[in-house]
Image 1: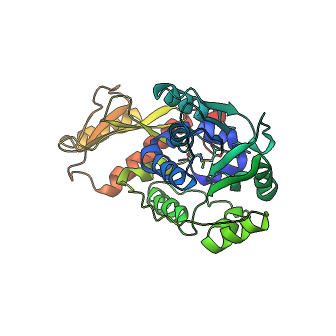
Image 2: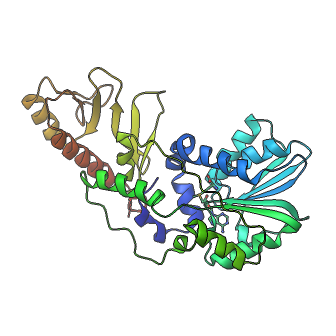
Image 3: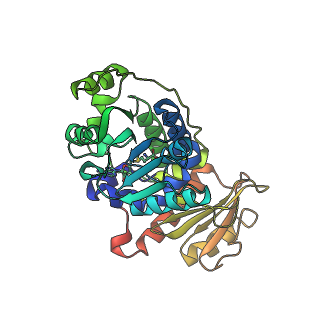
Length: 327
Ligand SMILES: C[S@@+](CC[C@H](N)C(=O)[O-])C[C@H]1O[C@@H](n2cnc3c(N)ncnc32)[C@H](O)[C@@H]1O
């Protein structure tokens, strides 16, 4: 997940493509379960034609394709090419040849035949005109077809983002999120969503509220440093944190004691190692002139480790070409 202040500076497809790693890292805890829950409510039937609008990497399109089976068809449309690539790879792995991923603006999508079901998870509020865009999706249905939308309940996602931002702000002050008018507020309660759907001319409207708790882990907050992303290129450990694709921290939480490797100016590397010889070690498997490995065993206060982390992040950001630096 990238910091929200990046939203207005990039078109939505480019933003989601650029943050594909962060998006993927939330898949198993957030997008995947929520997509499966949404499809449990929209209930695609065997043989149906489905449009999954704003499909991302296929969190709801994949279960829909499994539900309709090979006699059905699912078009999954999104503007973020990098997420579509992830979805295609997973569809191939699952042998879902009747699930097709398409890159494009779904508010202008045309199909050869109408759909039995259109579903859109956490997408409509990105449309420049939420109402016109959603009407277009409704127009793609056959008479009597169904549309299923999922939105965030007020105080839901916002709480998670706020908590993580607060924790990350302890390391580096974050820019305030933009105070733009937020179309999500129109559809962030059961009553509001139902009223809005009826205003589009839809009938038999039912809203299902699902209370889903996302387990937040301590290191999630790191990802709220602007542009920061986590990945696991070496298996389960260490977790690698990058900004603009370059590493600024490696965290081995499961090691005894847990440890984090960070980048520092070369003179500070020497000074820290001399001052804390039992806690600040030469960077493990890293260039020892620039990196240290800090044992998280109490030799340094948490605040000191946070400061080193912030410093490491700043050093790496400063080394990036201007176009890759986070806003
Ligand atoms: C929050 S993500 C949700 C993705 C997916 N539905 C899921 O639940 O994992 C929103 C997605 O909407 C896509 N999106 C926003 N506006 C769009 C548009 N007009 N046409 C196609 N995709 C759009 C973005 O690229 C992004 O992938």
